[in-house]
Length: 614
Image (cartoon, rainbow, N blue to C red; front, side):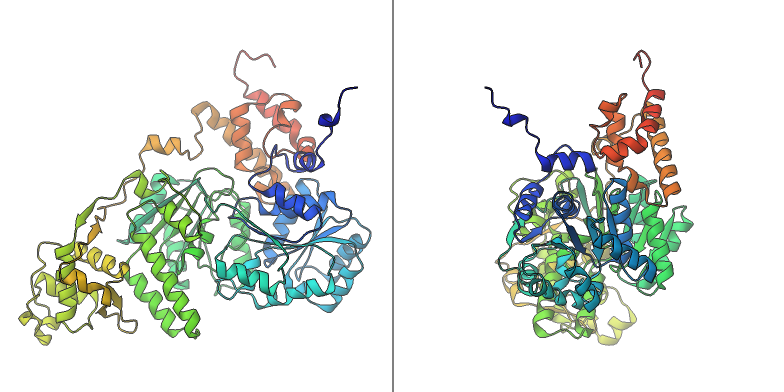
């Protein structure tokens, strides 16, 4: 008798294929799912776009009962639930946008066992009547999304998350999963402590996002730098531009519109309706750019954001990683572009002084800012440095950041550094960069005459460099912690570390700031593909996008809920012409095959190359 066990179907994989249209799990999704199916607690730290949601959506389809997902953003619940229905999964949410009739209907369906996944905001969950309602239903798992919100070390702290410890008390037998994309050791300890997850197994994914290309440029007319970047790389793409202040957000959005782009502002100063309208336009329509403060973006599920640009220095590498993590969630190539100058550092240091932080938090914030600066100034592979920050070994150069693409030339700056540092010392350690540069260049400004700085030995000793080069020198001396900025007036002071440089015992090398960002050459561009679509495929691409847009409009959901770009790309590459072929395409599960298969095959046949007998 032959052994038929290898014919037995793997139920977990079968659900992945049937509902999501994927052939295989990525990373440790499978291990997390198996662990939860066995009734255990887990904490999963995975970068944005690594497929965290599958870890709790699949148990909802396999276990007899309901999975409750706690998510902080109401606007996104709608889209997540809509996307799940597209896949034929019974999902619902309870939040303040619903009428009491709608809420009552959802609760009734839940009691009847007609819902597999229920999304709730933490505030809603903590209401006594919600807890009572949940205790009447067989719950098989609590999934706590964006779990880093429990930690005050992050930039997304939400006090209501602290109340979620109630789950371990009220539902001691129900397994819990905490997921987040922000994972410093401090945050991780807080998640374990405050959510009472001491027994949970920790799953830590690689934080590498190989499809993201990193570029950092020294700030020099940021609007024009942004324009050049967009014109060269992202003529029609959707993306996010982050700025530090609300005023700047409005200004950049308006400027982009004047330059023929569809751009919308998003910040906490806009009324709720406007914010929601702008967010849903960004999510539902193609090619929209959102200009925002960091108030925007937590949990943004749009898979086809092709770039994230920062026009001001982020406060920390964690924040930066989370913000750029919103690009390229579909795994296709995307860009992270950052411009920064030393005035950003002054601005952020000032904000720190004025904030009411405890000494500990303030020190931590200063260190985070220093790390961010070091990332900008590094001449080595940026990806290496980012991953090292998350305690992840990455031994080789990545080949997909500006420093790897066009290695930075450096120059021996020992003498320039000595001149700059002496000038700071001679002027009394209380002036900002612009005045110091005037002294070095020997300019007779009113201020220099009034202060008698023409008498100083450093007056005019720096004429071998121009003002732009001196700015770069000062910026790098600050990044190297040889100078610190006095936060109130922006004056510069020497640090202990500059002694050996001044004495000539320690050489110092500076990075050569490029005159202008070198645009990626077009052939490289095609290789890292802004979707490498050949001419005859272009029409097919447009036709498929139009079909997707029409279906999405009809149903009032974002286009990506219907198909991801990656699905369209695979249709073009593989040219399926039978239903059997179609069922193997990435992201086409059984419901989408049934609903949209005929339309897709009609288009595919219309574009079939001549000579194929269809």
